[in-house]
Image (cartoon, rainbow, N blue to C red; front, side, top):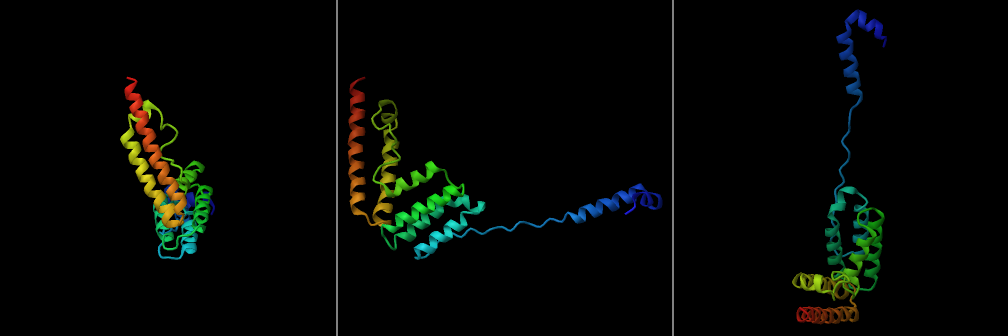
Length: 188
């Protein structure tokens, strides 16, 4: 298009609007495809983990991570076995690799469900200032975690010995927390 000829024959405003309309029409936008996140269901353990892992490669599905974990836990209860720990370990590693969760979060998820050790307590269970001030909340968190360990260790993996160990640790920690708080009160 010869701009000089356009301005002479049609005027500057007409050429300006012509160029503007050409630019606008050439910038047609297409809406990006929206991925539909589908939470796993059913009883096929391997396919459920494959679907969840594939879904979590899409940014739109990241916010549903806890729901994916919950559904996978429910699905694996239909077939409790040691192999389920490996499925979860790989799933959490993939979620970390895809930026859904951090390395620390992956470890916490795994330990919360599949280790007899308690992650909700941290290292401050024998400290007067933190433990005794928040004793009710700490015990509540530990009870919730023991429930999660029952789900993971007993119902998903079928590991009665590890769950018994978690239950024993829970009871020992309750005694330790009570003793710590009694000692703290006595020293006042």
